[in-house]
Every structure is written in structure tokens, then in C-alpha cells.
Image (tube, rainbow over all chains, first blue to last red; front, top):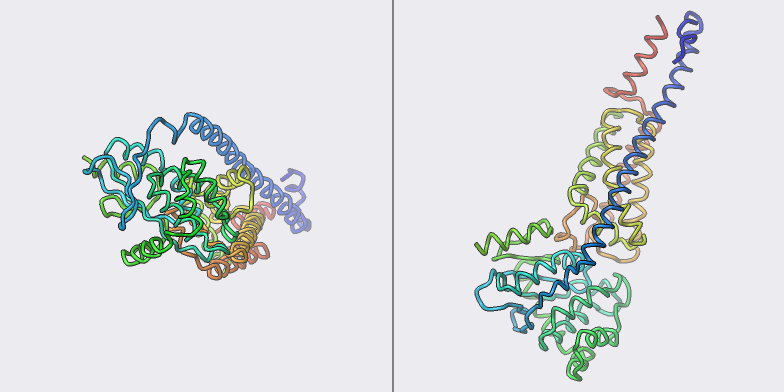
Length: 249
Length: 153
């Protein structure tokens, strides 16, 4: 506000007040805009920095850190990945169509690989199909059946990872049978038996039973992960690591 | 009414922003899961959004620059409504991530109608503040009064 405005006084007070209010309102708009612009700028800087960090960590090889997962063993009670017998019991329920499962797996896969490979944890994965309505071809069941086919040949981990990496969008037609076979071949599943198993959806009954058992066990969404029977709730890597460490000690 | 609108908007956005900012990974994934934006853009939006929500919530709470802050929140709400409606139309079942919801809870299909109704209610509150921005217990009204008093001397 200028000094001349102040001095005018008297009859001009109301008009001056209006003008003053207007200029101070304009000032407030500028201040708010500046604050908002700073917030946006800070966010962009954080985003760029995180991008750089992510790049370096993946270049360091998060999943290909030299750790090899043991061959998967298919049982009626899930797909087992374990070295030795006495590891911490980790149970994971996934739907191959579920984006959150893909995100969660990408976040924790190197930790799971580490703890399974060194015998600290015994992992049991339960593929289920609860999102068949999210594709026009019941992709949940088809892809679930395909990963069970791979599990029977010991290559569940590699194959399910490949399918997550190529996960189709929800509401799409999903990957075709040919594509499901192709990613299997890339993961080393070259047998004719695997191809037949995938294209005939030979394991869809297994998936249906797994889904039913999961529902009966109180699993309402995917991913669900339990360490020694206790559900994890926040979905962070730290949560999983500390739960496994606590159970192992 | 104006004060109630301010408190409601500030509370909702502050909590939502805080929940997201404490787990940025989830915030970024939930923006990406809408599959509306390219990954690079989604990454930036996922981080800028919670910051913006908190800053605007604080401005609305103290009542400083209420009109423009309410207009900005209204714009965000319109974007949210478009995002949720697009999920609904495309038959996608991602968690809306509205309150930085955990990845582990994201699978059961959320109620889109409920979320849109909630956002429309907030939009009405924001619209109210754009039309009548000067409300009680706000920095704006305090500043205005001070200026008037000053001028009348």
C-alpha cells in the first residue's frame, strides 16, 4: 500500500480501501502462486533424483545379483521354492493380471531371492485367478495355468517374472497363448509338454482349486503375503525384510 | 459454512497428501496404474501431487489466498474425477490410491461411484470458497480488516 493512499483519508477512504484490498488480493495471489510453484519444483527435483537412483540400482543388477532361485516344486498346496527345509515360512498369493502384484514383486523380488537362496526363507507361491473379469479372455486363469505348467518343470520363478514384466493392461485381451509360450521359451521352457500344457490350459483346475482355497483361508485381495502366518500390511521392502529377520532369529 | 468447507478440504487433502508422501513408491505406482500418463510423467505427477496437496491444504486451513487455493484444489478434484471415471469406463480394478493406499490392499475392486460422489462433494466445497472466499477465522479476513482499520485512521 502506498503512502499517498494512506494520507488521502476522509471521503476517499472507502475508495482507497477498495483499491488497497484489490492490490493486496493481487499480492496474495502472487504469494500463493509462488508457494505452489516452489512445491512443484521441489517435487520435480525429487522425481528426477529418484529416477537417477533407480537407474543406477537397476544397472547394479537388482535381480541378477548372482543369486539363483532353487527349482520350483509343484504341490497341491502351492508352488514351493526352498533350499533345505527349515526356512521361515513365507506365503504369497498373486494374480498374474494384478498390477499391484507386479509392482510388489518388482519391489521385493531380489530380497526374496536372497533369503530363499541362502536358506533363510521357504517361499510358497499361490497363483490365483480373481481378476478374470478384467480381460476379455480370462487372462488371470490362462496365465495362472501357464505359470503352474512352468512350476511343474521347475522354472516357476523365471517364468512368472517374465509374465509380470509383460503384464497386459487391465481391460485388454491379455497375452495370447502363443505369447505365453514364447515367454516360456525365452525362460528356457522349450519342451513340447510345456507348450501343450499352456495352450490346453491343463492347469486351470489347479488354479480354480487354489483360488477356492485362498478364499477359504481369508485371502481377499492380491498380493497377500504372510510371514509365519502373519499378514504383512504396508507392502514395503523394509517390512518384508524385518519380518523375515525377526522370524529367523 | 465457509469455515466448514475450509476445514473439510484442508483435512482431506492434508491426510491424503501425507499418506502419499510417506510412501512415494506406492504413490508413483498408483499413478502409473491408471495407465493414463507415460511412465516418466506419471513418476513426476506421483511425487508432485502429494506436495501440492499438502501445501494447498495448509493455505486453505489458515485461510490465506483462499480463492486461488480453492480454485487449484477444484482443478485437482476435476482431474481425480476424470481419472476415476476413466478406470470405471475401462473396467479396471486398480485401487484409487487416493489415500496412499497400500499396495497390499489394492486388489479388491474399489467402489468408483462412492469415490466420485466424495470428490464431487469436495468440489462443491471448493466452489463455495471460490465464490465466497472470505470466511471467519482466516488470515484473509484478518488481513482485510487490518487494512480497512488502517485506512480509516
